[in-house]
Length: 85
Image (tube, rainbow, N blue to C red):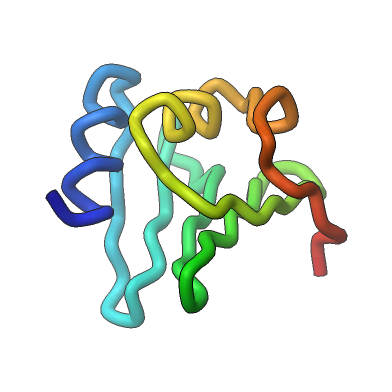
């Protein structure tokens, strides 16, 4: 299962739209507003909350981590919080 398919599977449970851009970036849209950006960089994932100044690095994405992203509880995981630029 590809990353996009995995994200779509979990996002469907939360009624969140998934936009996959040609450059591989995934934008999650809730209530018509983009609120999360997911980008793969080498062997890690860059997660950026577009509605607040928070960004994280995650080494592995699975359904549980994606649910944490959608629930905006990524800080409760082993994700590394980094400055949002």
